Length: 469
Image (cartoon, rainbow, N blue to C red; front, side):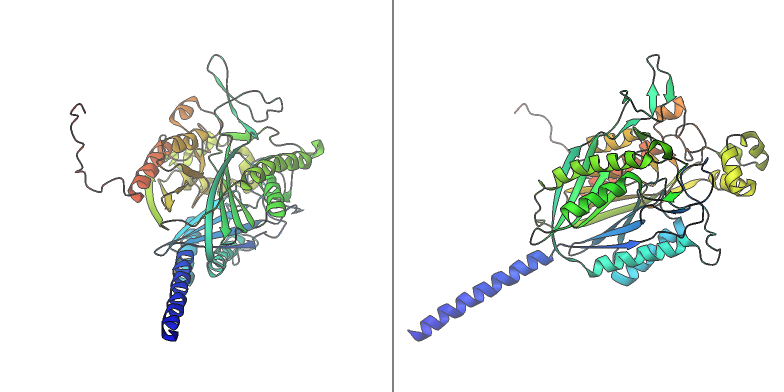
């Protein structure tokens, strides 16, 4: 009898231990880690975003941050890094970050995302504070380090998704009743313009106890509440939103800019004397209210089949400026560049044009997580129509259009907008050939279907004939 009891007890212990191991294996099959690092540059140097800005930075309103979220499945991993910068790093720095991260912690897929703040540092010249020790290089090394730190901090995690709606801005391309397009930069009366995308999408990441680790917020609106008269470095309205969410919700709040190429906040470029800071705080808090409302309702769970699949493709495009390859053509367009010539010097602008007349090799990044979440990374300022189109056509319901990701190639207008002209559509800010945006959205969708296993590499699947059943 004692032997029988011993066997039963031993069997029970074995079952409990087996269950514990199974549970442990399950919870460790999907992990997440988060880390942050400050990348604020020294003051006294150029700022990014406005050609008519006079002077250099004079102080710091917000610390500029890089925030890394690393997701791990049994076979793969992904790092998403959001940065309070006007645009992403240059190609060679992106390659350096990729290389260091793969070597240090084995993360194969990296998505670096700039918020597009116009209160950040100069991202064109890599010569300050000195040519020997440029800030961009130091910031890129910090970004590589924060990814490794997030990787080291990874733990079993749960994911959840939410969507809210908040109208912070308008489409700055106002179409008159006769069809003519005019630029409407500021829209204090909230005159209806379109299209816009008021959807704010969120990825919530919790630990196994339901405590928030990170909240990734995706929204499309230019961070330009401050104008060129502001000379303080800062994150604009996304910074206010993230700080408020972190204080009330916990964890790390991250902002991933969407397709905001033609979307401005209603109080665009508010002058300092008109209380620009008050307007920025008001908009940031309004967004935070909606983010907090939705985030608190998101239910997170352990993925049933953890999987991370990524496709990166470099797509070549001609330049819209290729007719300016002759240096003599510079004089023809010097007037358009007058503010930039005054700020950076004629030789710098000539070199800038020389780079722009060359074909572009654009990196497109498409990542599917657990067959539930799509993160489509586009390297530039895409018009909002592309975001709406991607979400409408995506086979993945939880889709994030991530702009300013893994590079920067200027504006990507729609074909219609390129024909109509205007800022971002028919001027020097639009670099790559017309139709590039449409092609990249199509390619991202193709990659998505392939990553889901729904598109065969070689055609061969037949659809049965209709038999009337």
